Structures are given as C-alpha cells and as structure tokens.
Length: 284
Image (cartoon, rainbow, N blue to C red; front, side, top):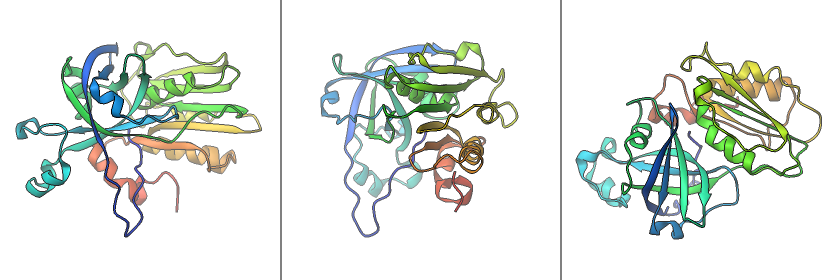
C-alpha cells in the first residue's frame, strides 16, 4: 500500500530521515492471504508516533546477497552500490500500536513469492530485524463529520480497520471492503452507526472481477459533511474519483483518496509513474 511522499521544495535540502530498527516479536496468519508481523524491541521508544489513524511506515529491503547491516547508511551505500543494488522501500500502514507492550502490528497481503514485502512477511520469524522510515500520516476520522464514506480493497483493509476503531461511538457511515472471498474477511470493530459491507470477487483481482467502483456507485450519500477515506487499485481510484467528485459533487479537498497499487505494475514501476499522467488520480 503505497502513499505519496512529500517532496522537499526546490533548492532546500531534504531533512535527514531517521531509520528505525525493530525486531520481529511474533507473526500471525490472519487469513489465507493476510499475514500480521508484530514488531518490537528497544527501538520502539525512539519512534515519534502520530495521532492520525492512518500512520504509515516505509520498510527497507535489501538484497540478502549483499550482506548489509541494519540500520543502513544510505549515503555511504549510494557511493559504493549501483542504483539497482540500493535498498528499496515498501510503504505499509501501521495496523495497531500497543504502547504498553511497545509493539506495532503491520499486516501484509501475501501472494506466494510475488513481490518483496509479502514474501518477507510470510517467512519472518521472531528475532528477524526490519528497519523503516516514518511514521508519516495523512488521515484521521473527524468526530464532527456527519457521514463517513470508507472503502478499499485488501491493500487498504489494515487502514480501514484502524480508521473504524478511531471513529467516535456516535459516528455514522458505511465501509465497503472488497476481498477475494469470505475466507479473507476479518473481524472489525466499527461504531454501531457505520455499516460494514464485504464484497467478494470470488477470484483474484482483475479489472473485470473487481466490484468496488460499481458498488460505490449504488451508495446513497446523504447531504452534509461527508468525510471520505478510499484507497486501493489505481484505475479503480480514478473511476471512484470521477464518481464522487464529478458526478456526485463531493469536494475533492479533504478527501483521502489515492492508489496503493496498480494492476499489472511492479511496485517500483508504480511509484515511478506517480508523477506521470497515467499515475495521477486527478486530471490536470
């Protein structure tokens, strides 16, 4: 699940980022395609957490054959490694923070050997080290909102679950979550006034099997202060943006709507396309 990073203004040096190192405490297979990795250790106390429910971290992964030691000295590595050898980042939502136990939970969508982060999570064992930048944040449910419109596919499920837990008990709204099938559903703690709707594709995601945009087109959105939190596959997010902004007239400002991934794209290609026309959710 990828979030767009803010760029430093031209001519201003980028503020050094702190690389945190934690270790795997335990793992849990939540569903056939969702694995949870619980991280902890002494490095927990040095992390500056945010108040928003949608806190995300940029996990760092390096080629094991290079034998690099965490934390990575990125400046030094740039001097001696090729760009292809440099550690890569993968952005994930913090599902839950347990301050008492000094742990954070990170949930990963796993599809066999596909990708980098998923296979790492599937094979992670207690004592393994992982490092990351962050957390960053960009969304929290507003208690004064009249209605919460929340939606996404599997990639957004951890963020949606955290958002629902962060809503006031009096909140009203709807959360629409698309997953492969009933086995991928998870227990969610939503306010009584927020309806949770599960969509089952009964297949892997394809432009033809997905049902998210079509389902949102049928939602009755009341007048008033509507707060939107919707994330998932890029082309679906473009359709949903047109539906909500162009057709329904909801204000784009304040709407948390972005792509976490793109069908048919590897993560690095998806990230590289973000500033190109194909990668933009909003038209020029």
